[in-house]
Length: 566
Image (tube, rainbow, N blue to C red):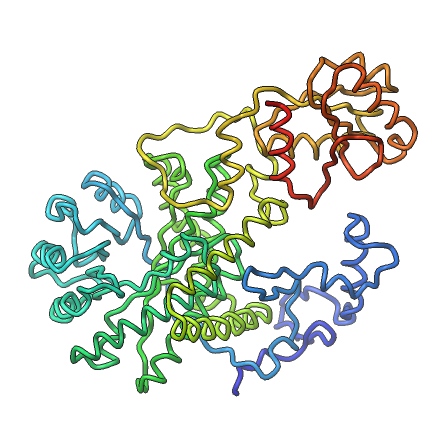
């Protein structure tokens, strides 16, 4: 295989760059560091955080800091030149400038407001009154993508288009796997627009992994090409009628690599189909709906910003940012404005469009692009041989794995499973929210039905002594819709009992030395005072009924606790 040269230097042998005349040297040439230096520095931080034992080797930081995706792909903490040995690094985006800012308006008022305040493209329901919906829209400037088009609705849109030269990116929106593909493709060919969408978000919304989403999209694209060529279209002509839609998540590097891998896979598919010079694939990225949370929804702004950033860096031609308040109902004007402005901040202020491939040459991203491409090609083979029903079974396995990680809080959801705010006042929205199962659905169900009684935190010792475990326990209970009432600073069993208000569930929070000194006596005294269920924060043996610690199945623990409270 051929590869693009990553350049000289690396972690062990830094490249020595000569500054230009008058330029400021950023570092002394002698200020170099080896791989071992980095490992030692990283290990020191992990040992301080108790994530690495004192007798663990410094080289263990690689295993400790490597993130493994749901597809089993490794994302290392640091990219190094050796990752690209004998790898092909094609699949780079070629988009020049910014991307289309695509919104999903519900009526003409929203259409005009969106276009007046930053939207550059529209994604609209095909069954709407298109003449009324698109009244006042300059269709030669603003691309329109139909959603769920039939031949009749495609013709209705072309009637609205009239003699206008359609804007680049206009798509009649046929389902690439649907029965009407050939008829709509014929209409699109005559009108000079795209015909269909290969929509990977349909399986993403059901919980599919990134590899499964790519594999599914490839399978649908292959089916569409076979259908169109069987109807008389040339392969390259058929390919140019298709658009790919993929989900962008807040897993930054994975999203960047996924979009880059999609281009590489598309080029390979067309190469095998006999297309010598395939055209550029148009990719529409949509920020993930399942990753959002209905609780502390303001955090959704951060999630969608990271997702849009990643899609832009990955070379998306068009991006739809799902409004932060979508889980709560119909997004309001504020939510829609924030969604539009997310792209504009990234393009106009962060200048992401100035470089065609900002991640190009980044060792970890190039490696992940290659890994995703190879794994997705294998997934395509499985779908082709085993069918879509078998894919659904594999998706169910991924959903179960993700749910398990969320339950153990090893896949944290800020504002829901981590740092929840029980007293928050959420914005209200009318109408139904998104109809997807969100990743935090199990915790949201607990929050929807708050516990009827609080848990007493039997805090041992000074605030400085017990605060770490008390905060951990308080956040854990809040994630399950359970309020807590802490004792505060105490100096012994009597002080804790003086603060105890007769709650049925008690959680003892203290240091390991305090547990050893008076933990057992405190648990016994609390039981005598009326506590029916005593939990200890940590793994100390103090005679408690239950324990809670980082990495446990938090969801199961919360269900157990709520049963006692009920």
